[in-house]
Image (cartoon, rainbow, N blue to C red; front, side):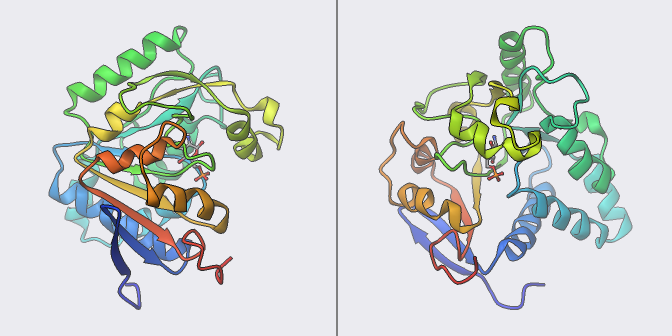
Length: 263
Ligand code: GLP
């Protein structure tokens, strides 16, 4: 579907795919996700939320809709995904929760059973117990097959804020001021309205995925992405721990790679 083949290279052990813009990234990543569901249906996908992911889920719905009916139905029926994270303290059904975002952007457009799109329950009365339970649920499902990650401006993945060690597991965390500011648009632009805590899978569960796809778009991420591609791993940039994983693909647009002419 894309007119030109993506430019691919290895960078510090990462396979790097460079594409023109966020829409080309979305089509490419959506195709990889569908392939993963075909190739390794027994293991759940690991999914993320955030603005980077929005065009990916749109492309996924379109590509799934173009499959022969029986194949599309098979993929829907066998769907299983675990999201990285959700805010703590929003009421169940709050439209600003990541659960609500996944229902709107993935469950409804793809026609999935919501029970097969798993997220931690940020409205649980005991968030620490819920984090442990969610980690155990993922483990019982066999761990993640392909983990898709967005990248925070401060180098976070999931809600693993710096400083963060590679061994941390699913847990309750405090969000940094910069992350609350970055996510404020969904909360009327007010960082104080962004919940202060979240449940997130840890680097331990992320690095246990069989393969990892780090998706980065936009010039605002160019600086942090450059640090991460260069390595070495450091707690100050949680995504840099991905260098410890043997199968990481980075899919980025030209702007995120600092090419500068695509905004
Ligand atoms: C958020 C989420 C991450 C997401 C990242 C980037 O806070 N916890 O899962 O991937 O930060 O978000 P965006 O794509 O909106 O830049």
